[in-house]
Image 1 (cartoon, rainbow, N blue to C red):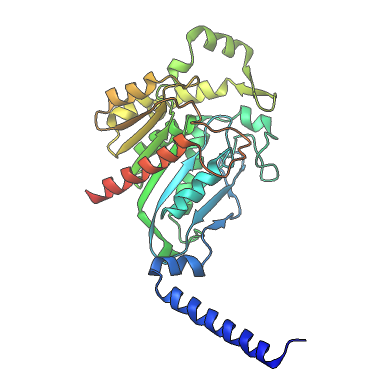
Image 2: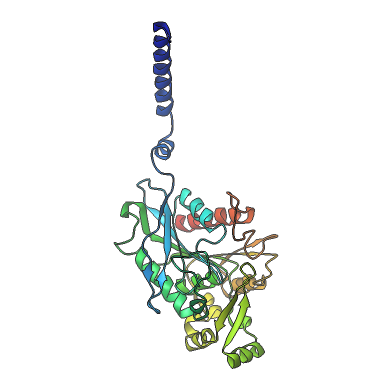
Length: 326
């Protein structure tokens, strides 16, 4: 049993510890105090939007630090055979949020995933019938949502006048095209972007594809044979003015920051150099040793970003700050 002296001593120690903690807290900078009393990163997963194409769902999520200050927005588009929760994308979103951004990423309505199976290609027919018109319109739907009063981020936490697009691979091409047709976009960041669709489709391949009506491509991770119906080619040529990347890049007037790895075996490095040739104002970053995913894979089990992706994040933040300082 503890005697009275022991109890008094314990109370004294507790009082001393509390006073010391209180004194220490008063010495902390204001921004540290904010971090101590709030959730570090808010992760919001609203109800899916509805695509104008076949009423398919567009799932999306939003990450930001709630500190009462308006923040710039980055909307991220995944690439071919990708999805919003692929690999390190959640870590990337968290990292941008902690750096003072509202970060939004989404699944294209026809990317093959479903709300019930967001990381599996459970709807291969939708995947096969995807095309550039669908992806552009889906992206527009998400942009409209960000700019609406129904968006999940409180107005005091977001500055819609500082709105940027970011995308990987086919998603990098998509954000270049979307930035050209949407004046709300203030800048574009592309990662290993395709910059010429027709170069990807040699004429003999197109003829065979048209004859068969479908081309199958194997997913190296899941081993699924994923269909690509010829309709994507027909959609491209029917709307070529909207999707003609070389001409779009030449005419694009918003700031561009484009990254490409020297070891990219999927999209050749010369596409980065083509982009710079077509738009002399574009900022390009050659990532020495970088592959197509810049060190990522799915699933990604590390709790830190790949070295090359950390570099991309830091350079992207510098790019935005520099652009806004002018």
